[in-house]
Image 1 (cartoon, rainbow, N blue to C red):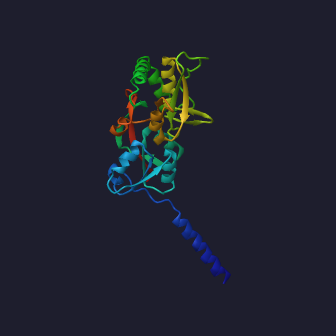
Image 2: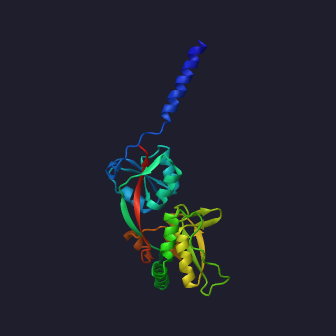
Length: 258
């Protein structure tokens, strides 16, 4: 009798383990996203793209990393995310891969309060300078191609700045554009803003807030610039003004390996 009970117990454990097994991947191309459960970071362009997919169930996360973890655990079928952080997250999890086919391309720019033309003109002038002198290219090369983990552009080493402080609002959950290194916020956008602030002779101060609160922070005057791998969309242009584009990014689809 004990053997029978033991056999039943073992069978139950096996069945339970089978129930917890991560399902096989079913997304092999962009077309396969129809009707699937898709993870996105809240209020990003990936969120907007996923919402337009026929029959898709969009699961929104405060962090891109949380969406990727849910994918690895089998809770969702795919994640739509910017290529930069997608590559970082894929390298951290061998069970995931990125589809060869890009979902979309988008332009990233810096946001300022609607109507703040004076600041926008200064930022654009500084942005043009760091493009022409090669600093912008060095920042992207360091982070994207050389896998920098702490920072490419140093700068911001003066004791005082003639034109005061510039507050940058970001969401430090989007490596390599912005992430946390202990108490510090680092990434491509931080390095770009450091370089811009050096051109403007201003001290950079970085505030980490929710992504969907950045434009509101600009409008309330709690921040001067929004820098968070933010794409320029018609909807956002109604709420804020944007600088010249500083990079063209690609939206990709992350899935589990076959």
